[in-house]
Length: 283
Image 1 (cartoon, rainbow, N blue to C red):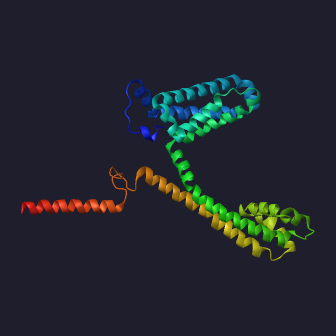
Image 2: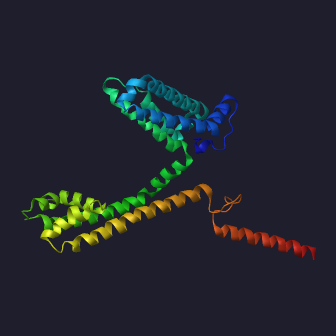
C-alpha cells in the first residue's frame, strides 16, 4: 500500500520499477494466494499424522512464504524509503514479518505459534477488508459510549439481582448464580447472550421467586434488543461514512467532483448564468 504522501509522486529508475512491481494487480493477487496457502499449511501443522508424513513439505512451504513476504517488504522499503512507515498497514505488515523472522528457539519458541498472524495480512492486502477495519476503528468512540452505558446497566442490575436472589438464600443454585456481584454480572452476561437463559437460569430462579420474570424480561429488552443493536447501527453508519470518503456521494465519472449537493447546485447556477450571458450577447 503506497503511503499518502507519495500518492502523486513519480518515481524514476529502479525505484519506479520496484514500486510498479509491488503495486501491480497481479502481484497483489499473488501475495494474497501465498497468504492463503501459508495459513492453510500452518493449520495443517496442528494435525500430528500429517506432520509425521508431510512435515518436510509443510516446512518448505512455510520458509518459502516467509522469503516471499520478506522480499515484498524489502522491495517496498526500497521504493518508498522511510515513507513506508507512514502507512499504518505497512507498519502492520512489517511487524508481522519481523516476528516471523525472529529465531523461534529457546525462550522465543513460543513465537512459532504467532506465525499464524501472517493470515491477518489478508486484511492489509484486500481493500474491502481494509475498509471494514477502518470502519470499526471509526466506530470505536461511539462504541465506547455504548459500552459505558451497558456497564452501568450491568452494575445496577447485578446489585439488584444479588440483593433480590442471592443474599440470605440457602439455595446452592442461587448462591452460585447470584451470590456476589461478580457472579451476578457473569450470569447476567449469559442472559444477555440468550444462551439457555430461560431453562438454565430464569425458570430455576422462578421456582423460589415466582415474580422474578419482572426483573429479567426488562433486562433482556434493554441489553439484547436495544443497547446491543446500537452497536450494529454505529458500525453500519461508520461503514457508510468510510464508503463516502473513498467513493464520494455520487456514482459515475463525476462522483468525486462534488462533495456536497450545495456545490452541485452552485455550479449549475453558474453554468446557467454563463449560458444566459451568451444568449444576451447574441441578441
